[in-house]
Length: 345
Image: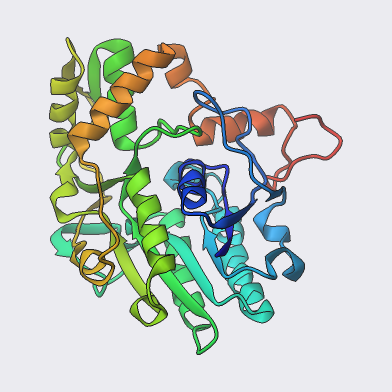
């Protein structure tokens, strides 16, 4: 297939692209590359690309593809909270417009990287794809908005699919520390403390970025009728964990560390468990390979290999919100999170 991956230089995209190439797909990327100074390890596989803000995409940019895998956007709750209006503009309105353009030029398949954040304050109940949306952040609200609007575009010629990823983890060339398992292992490795900022009780489903990538590939390779205008929770039922359970796993994996709770840590209203039975039933090619313990071991080995320091971990390089704030403060980005053309990046 001829595949366009938006956000191909992001945390998930840099892992997904090599997996697509390994299956002999023709892959083109589209990304504004806000995090070009944030590469972890050996770097990123080069592919043909369009360096462009997702808000500026034109019909000619998306013409001629069999499928669009849409990952681009502000990637988490802290970034989403920075400017909720911009979050709506980038994550919601630009995504819907991208789907409209794709439909206009005859792209048959559109697979959207949605989120289990859609469920938000979901509580203790195991939530499936028919459960009510209850987003509690601008990021979650933007994902819900895209699903609702893009689903209305579905017809005989345009087939959207919505992959509601659990909380991601794992090693990537564009590593992030603002993800729970990545963060806990980094605290343990750099300080000897598995530091928990809540009371440890909230539930969180987690999924490795390689398994998220496997879900995208399984969805694009599936028969159209199996995924047409369908949503799928991405993960496994066994990978719903309380935060304190993840901390205990990290304590067992990283030698000499101890779990520590923040003195002011309270319950997090973002608490949800998800039922991932549907994706495993409908997409038999989706075979997740990872669990929390293996993921913690991978992260620990990567941090050892690169000699991760507390300064790097707590610095701007691998924290999306801190890096964006640095680019804004230095004048490299304008207030709309666009590169200033006259400033060297």
